[in-house]
Length: 513
View 1 (cartoon, rainbow, N blue to C red):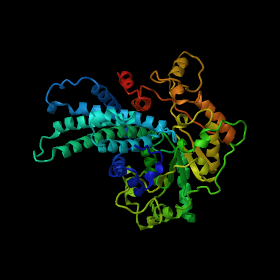
View 2 (view 1 turned 90 degrees about the vertical axis):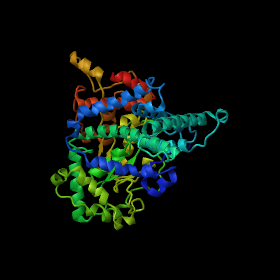
View 3 (view 1 turned 45 degrees about the vertical axis):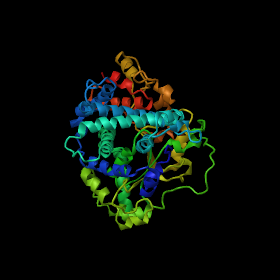
View 4 (view 1 turned 60 degrees about the vertical axis):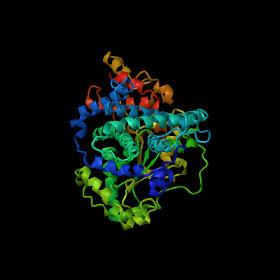
């Protein structure tokens, strides 16, 4: 099994069909996402906060319950509890994720630390890989290497689950229908259902973040400024798109899809630290010195596709004033994406008209280093997880590179949620505290495991001040109560993500009890 490490394969149908064992499921994800987005209402995060917290607890509880002895294990197969089986599959899929991380990290040529989206597309492909493995007798499996032995353990698990799930759902089907086909169909339906529930938890997480930000994925004032620039470009018939770089590791494609669909006047490009290996190797530099980096003569400015996007998409958006835009429903914004793709877009190599839309027309992945990007390219660079991507040694080189590829007057936006239980206790005792600086979470030494920057916020401000000048740095803070359902969801989803990353899913139930 070859682990994917290039997100650019998701930019076109042809590359997806070449990469996946079966691309249909992967290509349908955007349609499913748009269906979810079209149903969103402004106050859903508040109105359903308690329900969403319960959904997360229920998901974790089912993982725990699936590892307990089944009360009906001595009964006939038809007595298996489908919820117990779904929990077992969900738990096993988390094992898949941990195993794929190990395979990616152990590759001597790549040693990739997978982003969340790379993890998800590798999961899709790995499941098909497992199901397609030829059957082997146990004595031959024993002669395989350790990785292939693990492949067959997963295959045997799926075979067992397929029989048990099928036995619970055959009622209503004719006896002459082929049993083997039904077993496989039932299994894939269950895997799809469990996977959808997991991705839905991330959607809830994102929706809360945007609710706390006046409904926008980019800060309200910045969004308003970008909208005015878009309107000015329309007036001047300037065909260069407004470009936003999402520098991301912890979120799946759903984050950039949401940003692209809800801010359709922007061109969104996503990348990650894993493609900038030379920057990761640099030591943090002192003063105003820039890293000595060998750059290619030809650098990417993303302008090649601008004219096609302008003629086929941006120019055709019927958006009024900014207040009018703010009043648009999510259903209206989804309609824009669904109707995009007329003949004008044939000029774009990545966005040819097609009945199946695999991504927003104004979004793409970039799987090359930041050092290959031309200076003064982006109007905005945003990263919500920079503290998880970088360490103290390479923070400054990356900030310097962000500064280089931002346009004059461009904005680097770095939203972050800081957990600070220790600071809260000190503050309640009248002790002066600094910004939250959590080193542990759920008894997990996250700073050590992730090589986090101590006192991240203070260090970030210091580096930003050196690179951008102090007078250009602005920050605002909001204190969130963990007793609020919105905040409780953010904390508990973070717990789920961290435990998955470290292969400690069993600890979750202890946390939530």
